[in-house]
Image (tube, rainbow, N blue to C red):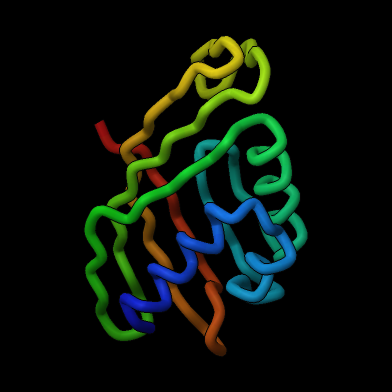
Length: 123
């Protein structure tokens, strides 16, 4: 795993292209986040499709720490509502309003793809 891989991942994430993003995920990927536990590439991509349908979702890695087949990444995630959102993580947003989250991602790679991901909110 390399820092360049992580940067490519976030660039691809920000492209709103689920097909391109799929290449980063192991078929049996497991993702733990505020939305719950998603198991399998399609479940993760379904959540991504939902997010980019509701928000312009832009993640920026602010710090990447690599160790073997794992990475810890501090992330600033800006979610701009495409239309009014009644409740997302306890927050209501008007169309065009932005919610900024400070997150930390823990990634483990297997066979060149992300196999296990934990995304947690900081602060």
